[in-house]
Image (cartoon, rainbow, N blue to C red; front, top):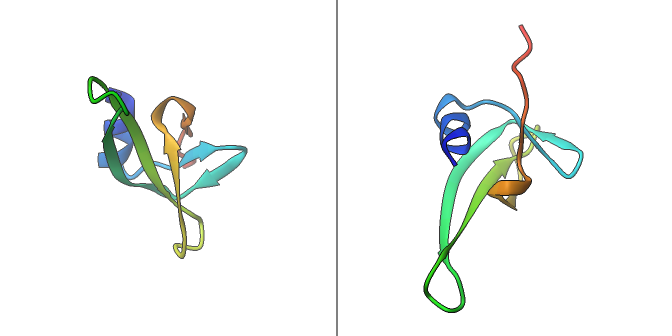
Length: 67
């Protein structure tokens, strides 16, 4: 969770499903169906800046920035 927040604030690139995304544009908290827990998701901006994907936080990989 802290790494997701740090990547969001630092606008670092991330990977999901074999695709590298520019950055996380939002962190989303949704209640579970029983109302007792939370699902944490990231909104990922594609390389072209035209589309987003929503991914579960535990499925997002953090990419090291290239110099």
